[in-house]
Image (cartoon, rainbow, N blue to C red; front, side, top):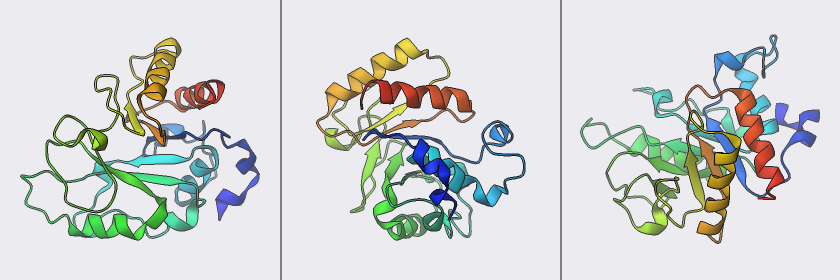
Length: 204
C-alpha cells in the first residue's frame, strides 16, 4: 500500500482534515504526481499528504456506481471519504447502490454531501448545503455559518487573508471540527498546499 511510504511523515499533524474535490486531476500530473506514477496509485499518493477527499458526483457510473473497489487498500485508517450525492429527486435512479457503497466504507466514510434541496433518509452521516435540513446537519460555508464540523470552501476567488478569515470563523462556529473540503474542480496543487500550511499555522 503506497500510503506506508516515506511521504507519511509529511502529513499534517493538525486534527482538522483537509481534502480537495477529487484526486484524479490530470493537471497535477508531473507537478504533484510523478510522471511515471500509474494513475491507479494516485489515490494512495494523494492520501500521503492529505487526509480527506470529496468524491465528485461526476465519478458515479450508471451501472457500477463509484469505482471504490481498491479505495480502502489505498489509504490509512485515518483518511476520510466524503461522497458528493450523485442524484437528485428528478432523475428516477435508485439511491440504494450509493448508500450500500457508502456503508461499505465503514469508518473511512466522513459523510455524504447533498447539494440539492432534498432530504436523504439514512443512518449514515449526511451534510446538506442550504437550509433544507436540521441546522446540525448543514455544512459550513462562508455564506451559511451553521454549527457544523465540516466546511465547504471555494478558493478560486480567494486569497490567504480571506481564507484565514474563513478558517477562524469556522473554528468558532462549532465545538467539534472534522474537515475542510475545497470544492474547486480545477484546484491548483500549490493552492491546496498553501491552504494546508495555513491550517497548520492556525493550529487547527
